[in-house]
Image (cartoon, rainbow, N blue to C red; front, side, top):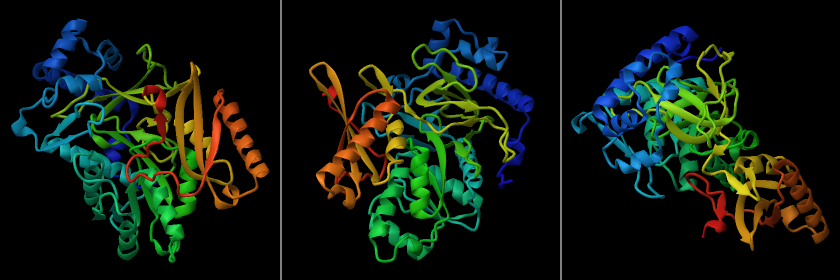
Length: 434
């Protein structure tokens, strides 16, 4: 059994956990109705009385919260406490409009720290570790969440922040970092750079990687583990709900444990909003039941996954969520077929000769959707004779068509020619929207 940070709460029996969730849910509903006009208006419009919630099944009576609600109530309209009680403010980048602003009381920060300590412990991080954080520090929640969780465990923390890959590598080598925190795509960027250096991967002391902030496939996990010689673990969070610490993998890596004593998960049909039975694939909806400053009720995450309620071999009893396939609003509809970038990634990573960097270009030829998949390949293939290159391209195009149910044109590009990202990778360029 792997180490468990908080055995009392992480190993609760289902009946005990359900009773705790219901008690905390009732308290939260009373607070949001009394203190957040948006929720009072929503509940009144839907004819929902918070006193009528007597079981977790009654959660389905409540309306959803969306990112649009947060934007309409920018900046502080969704806070459930006076601003004088808020000790930390974070926000999203706001690249698609007004940023979403979130706040934390001192107790919220303590809970956040505890929950990140939980999933970091589950991933194998302990007080003897040196944790290298390559997320950007600032309004983004990622770096701060893991920083304080690692300190709570007793690990040494290097708050490196993002950027300057050569310096990142030098620090990891010199300071003997044992745990790496960043996006999975940036982990591959580090691997690329290390393989071109004179010292190579063996100059690092890394044992584990804690990767999040973007969807990534099991094939990408294998690639990272092979090239960095580490155990790669997944974790999940989003700023609107808390930040990292909503869920994380244990060393069994059979799904990310959602910390149900703080969050109630549901899976819904992203089109109809209907709640789906356990095991169904759909959109994850989360309700916060312990947050003071910024509690979200039935928040639509847009992330596509499924839930597994079977107890895990590690001893934790909280439900596990599968790796996210992508976001419902990132799903590509090509010639009427639903396609997630991670599906394409899974296929590409299985083809020998493909480098772990790709770009998807969507366009329209008249009324017909087109998909071009640009793939970096190793130098042997890129400079191979035309006939063999054509055979290689045909092989990939057939695999994509078979798996996706839609055709794609494959274009081979030389190594290191596609843009590298220090944060979230930008895999898709959709020219149909321009």
